[in-house]
Image (cartoon, rainbow, N blue to C red; front, side, top):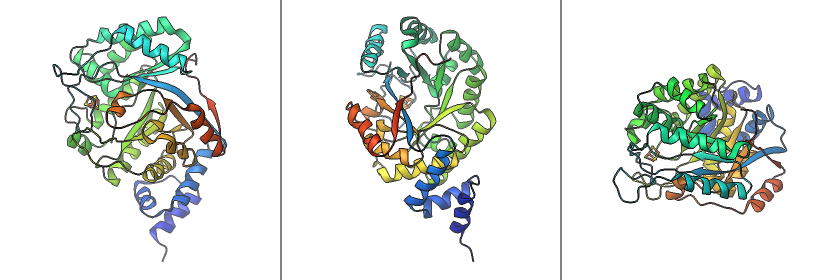
Length: 353
Ligand code: SF4
């Protein structure tokens, strides 16, 4: 009798689309070598096997004041709590100037759900960035989660908020704040964040407004295999519907200093998940690997289905919970070459809007 694994392996060899049940079988039974081989084949549909791309970027954590109270976050301070901050315009500019001096051209804005910051703070900041840096800088303005909070706070619909940001010069709102896209996970860990249904509704509005967005995922909390697969399934279905997701980036939970605590997952588990994601997300061309949370070992992900990575210079959210930054870019790029790939810089600044 043919085993379930043999059936799924045959489907993989035939290039068939992976089902949720098939993904569970692969996760439980496929060797690292088989996962890597199938992921490499899925990657080759979009990218030359010996090529990859990268960005030098910085996350600008403009405020750490947040009312969401996610139990996996070591970054936030409640309103009025000691240690809370909001960056001034000049502090933001200084961080961008540092980024440009290090050869980067992408800033990702990520802060908290700060009830004291009005929508105008953001719109004026983003308009000022466009005016000051023009085609030397591109920026990811907020995550979908922050976007939803701001829209609610300003009593605007998702569509109205998207238009306001677009008018302020925004081109990107990332899919950050997704973590694990199941209602049960969100109820367990971030009661004040948005539901999965709301997350996708907002992302639909962002895409409809002509803004660009991405898919994200974070693993290594207490999520089950079924929850990981549900996240991939929902992401793939959303991409089938909208074709609006420019990339998929999965990073790993850092437990230090968080209420949830726990242990970090292994590098091998991350690489296997990356491979599974590449195979599952057959409709997303760009699959990225997370140097921010996996350091140099993330680059092995280029052999497990990823084709792109960031070289980050700062992200306080993950650094607060244990992430470390490696600014030795030449040695990181040398490792990529040692793996047999040629890395090319993927400039976002100045790219067509
Ligand atoms: S993860 Fe983001 S939304 Fe959640 S508490 Fe931290 S800053 Fe707030």
